Image 1 (cartoon, helix red, strand yellow):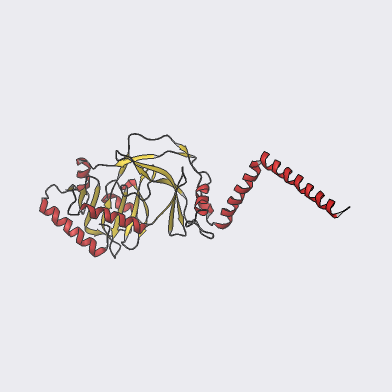
Image 2 (cartoon, helix red, strand yellow):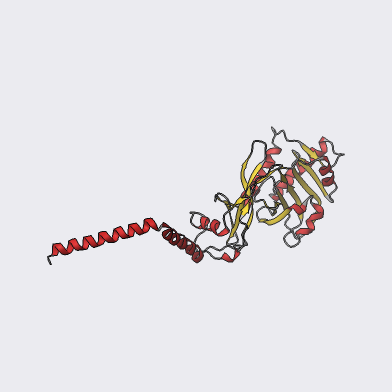
Length: 310
């Protein structure tokens, strides 16, 4: 057989093989998708530690949470004013600034329950962690689930160098009248895969160091002031970084304690700006305008001295 005929025979064989493989791919695409998905899953399992912190039976459905700022009523103001050993002011019927007359010798991390008798509606908050630079403990509000890093639903408790509680900032949300129906959400593993395959989040060798939980995170405000909070998976990585994955749409974000404290400080500073129209109320009904001005001046001086959140 001549060499030319041999080459022609090889070409025909490879052409037939190519046609066969193309036909097989067109008629069986799922086989290839499964292989790709399997490869991605194995990639995550082989390169990320702490997968035991992913729930084996996570919720499969969750709805958006519609919430709005709670306006502090006269009855609420009375209850806040009855709390022991503290002086409080209310900004725009929503934000509470309170300073203790005598520091509280309470270990916040080990005995958070001891704060209950000193802080209004304390049972609505869940301890998150400490921001070291300002000596501030962060508590997220819970409405069915924790609400992550929301300036309108948080409790910030500051301590002095002796770890004694000296002041706190508090805001609170409440459910809006209208709520959405539950819808299907992603699994924690799907959320983790999104973090792993997106640049700048989780890398090979990182570890999930706390149980992955489902909570809520800000999506967008509505014109009527209602916040739309999306179901969100929280990941703690290497005991120091926090990532949040929208459980419906898969959006990724990172947050940290220091930036959040700075956001609160900026918000409070705006209340006391010269051009501010904020309404400031004292819980002590006997105070006049001079008493209120003096308290605010002392509060701001203390904040400068302690690098606090106020």
